[in-house]
Length: 123
Image (cartoon, rainbow, N blue to C red; front, side, top):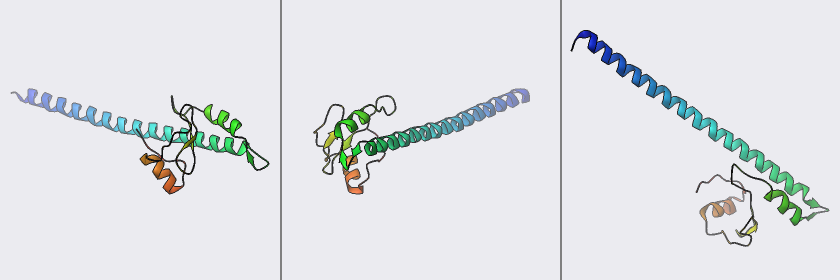
């Protein structure tokens, strides 16, 4: 192989390495940006849901019908929704499964143990 051919081959390899490296960096940055956007949207929806709870309390009494209508009108992402469980892990507000016992599911057990109604999990 001539010197010119060797230089050309090295240049091509370097260009491929640079393009792949830049592509990887851009992909990683995009993933972080998407994750931050999703988390921000969930935080906003959670704050809105908490406001709905506060607005559904009148004279110390919870207006459950108003709360249910308000919460079930929220869409998280494209298809998600908030739900409410009681202290034993049973769904008390859900679009289609009210009354279902979820206490055997890991993410529900975590919420109950931590007494925190917002955790991150993926199916």
